[in-house]
Each structure stands twice: as structure tokens, then as C-alpha cells.
Amino acid sequence: MSDFSSEVSALETALHQSMAEEGPVPVVAVVGRPNVGKSTLVNRIIGRRQAVVEDKPGVTRDRVPYDAQWSGRRFTVVDTGGWEPDARDRAAAIAAQAEIAVQTADVVIFVVDAMVGATDVDEKAVRMLRRSHKPVILVANKADNQNIENDTVSLWSLGLGEPFPLSALHGRNAGDLLDKILAAMPPAPAIIENAPRGPRRVALVGRPNVGKSSLLNRLAREERAVVDSVAGTTVDPVDSLVEMDGEVWQFVDTAGLRKRVNQASGTEYYASLRTAGAVEAAEVGVVLLDASEVISEQDQRVLTQVVEAGRALVIAFNKWDLVDADRRIFLDKEIDRELKRIPWAIKVNISAKTGRAVDKLAPALRKALDSWEKRIPTGTLNQWLTALTQATPHPVRGGRAPRIMFATQAGVAPPRFVLFTTGPLDAGYQRFIERKLREEFGFEGSPIEVSVKPRKKLGPGGRGKAHG
Image 1 (cartoon, helix red, strand yellow):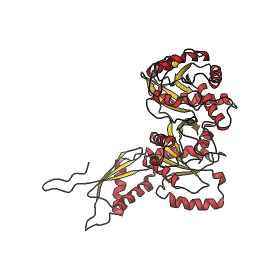
Image 2 (cartoon, one colour):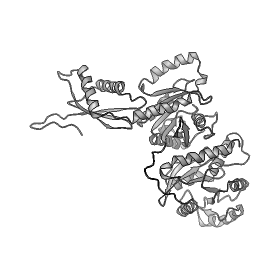
Image 3 (cartoon, rainbow, N blue to C red):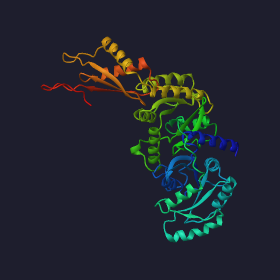
Image 4 (cartoon, rainbow, N blue to C red):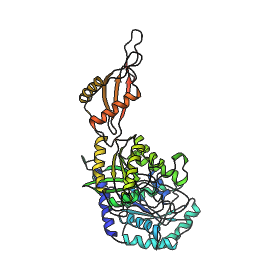
């Protein structure tokens, strides 16, 4: 494999940087031939259904890390695609990802099918594992009963020591396996106090085949995610630590979804849940659009997902190398029409294929995150609001106009403002205030929330109170 050692070195460095606040976290790679139950085992180890599982081989394609914990020890478990010798095309890329996972792991779990026994592919995989010189735990999965467990003794022939019988599906012997994994890990490091915050979390989202994995590979300077001209190659969210403009960022490449979540099924349904979770866990979303194609309903749904999650937003128009002068004219009109509800989003024009303008991503992300975490002092906010409402008071309704008595910023990430008023505000006037807030204080790249707390009407002999 070309540049294999440099890929391994880069990933090892990134993995250690990612957990600087707690010292290096051990990495456990789960490998094996296709359809032996690797993703089911990963879900059992992490204690939740997060890795996509389906009863057919080839569902997992990239190496996908998940946070795990057992007996107070944190570690990262890496799910991999099925390893096969002499693989070609996409299968070769999947096998390469599995081999990189082995090289960067502290402990390797090699999974075989207890009901099938050792195969020629398993034996060739063992030779690859021996070359890695990493501790290997041989797991005989699908040992659902004592009879199958008794048959696992034949797996001693693989030369990896005693096979560990397990049923990942039913949890049989799972706790004992976790104890064995912990025993094989390097000693726990001392906790580092007062360490800086970890890398900023970026969700890379978009409909299928807009170039998300290609952009991730461009940024990571390695084949971090499997790329194929067939749409829908990525199923699981794939974490990558990449350095841009002197700073490490944690990117998550997500599945491109063709359908609404409630219309998806099987792999796509669970992939949609993983994508939604990746957006929720991120601080900023990079929504990738294909600049050479019309902005679609799918694109709109992805944008809505990021905005409704309250995340900072950068829109990257990819495949700019395919855009000619005529297309630019039409694209400008599409942006005015289709993206008019989010004029505050930061937009960059890039080409993952050629590398054009990808260096603009880091400044755009920083600007969006600065807006996302911006706080306006209460005094400054109210001085500005008083001047605004005096210059443009609320329209009179029924002979009276509600007044804004006071405003405060209730929170950040995203910025949230509360207006305490003498009565309900017109929706149009509330949007006017939000627009003026942006004009005055920026917030480019971040959604903001403006809510109204009208004072309760005075009761007989009572004083008014604001709704709380």
C-alpha cells in the first residue's frame, strides 16, 4: 500500500492529540472477515446501538471510532469493514482501512464465526495480524450455547492462543471479554489537569455523492474514508482529526441520506439516526452542496437539520471546478431564492477534487463558531434596543402598542435572547429585531433565537408578572 507508514503515523498522532485533556486513550480495533458480527460486537462493547448492523456483509466500509468505558477506564473502539485478502476496487479500500486500524490500535480483537470455524480468509488475516506485533484477542462470535462453545477449541489452530467464546448478539460472556480487553491495554496514564479544550467538532453533512468523503480525505491528506462514484458509500459517521490552518479539528463524515428519516428503512434508517446524532454532537455543521447541480429538496432538508439542531453553519459549494459562467449566474439566483431563510450562513466555494479554496474552510469555521459563542453585555444590548425601538416603535394595534421593557441574553451556543414586554409582539416586528441584531452585532454563521416574555395582565388588585 502506498504511503502506508505515513498514514499510520498521521493517525497515531491525531489519536493522541484528540485526547490531550485526559492523556492518550487506548484504542481497540475490531477486525475480521465480512459478516462475522464485528459491528454487533462493537455495539455490545459500547453499550448502545450505534454501529450500523444489517444481516448482510459489507455494511461497514470505513474505520469508525466510538467512545467506550468499562470499570472506570475510557477507551476508543474502532469498527472496521470486512478484511479480505487480494481484494480489488472498493473492497481493497475497505481492507486497507482495516489494516490501518490494526496498525494504530493498542489492542486488536480478531472476530471469527464460531459456527463456521477457521476459514482460509481467517488464516490469511492472522498472518497480517502477526506482522502488526499488536496484542490480539481471538473472539469466537455467535457461540450462542454451550455446544457451539465446545466446538471453538478447533480455533486453537489459528495460533493466536485460546479462543474466547462469545455471543455479541445475546451478550453471553461480554463482561468477561471487556475485562480481558482492559487487561491487554497499556497502563492508565495520570490525569492531566487544567488541559486545554479538545478539537472543535465539525459535522460534514450533505446528500449522497456531493463529495463529503473526498473533502475529508483532502483535508486529512490521506484516504481516511472510502470514496466511490456510487452514491451512498458512507454508512456510519466517520471521525477524523485533521489539521487546518495550524489547528486540529474533529471532522465527522456522515451518511448522505436519500429519504426522510421516517421513510427510510434498514441500513439507511439507522444511518439517518447516526447522522442526526453526529449533528447533535457537533458544534458546527459544514453542509456540502454540489455547485454543478440545482439546489434540491434533499439539500434543503440537510440544511434544516443543522439549523434546527442550533449548530453553527458553513455552506460549502463543492465541485466548483465544474461550474462555468452560465451556471454561476443561475446559482446566484438559486441562492437568493432557495437560501433566503438563512442569509446569515457563511458560504465558501471549493473543490475537494482539485483542492481549490479548501484553505478557506478553517477561517469560515472559526468565524461561525465565534458567532455561535458570542455574548452581548446586558447594558450594551439594552442601550442598543432602546435606541432601536425609539427610532422604529412597534405598530399600534387596537389603540395601543406593546413596549419592550428589558432584554437579556439567556445563553450562547447558539445565542439566545429574551425580550420582556408589556404584551405580545407581532411576528414581523420580532423578525425585525432579529434582523437588526444581526446587522449590529454580526452573528454570521450562527442561528440566533429571540423569544418574548409578555407581562401578565393585571388582575384585580394584583401586580403584573412576566411569564416564566
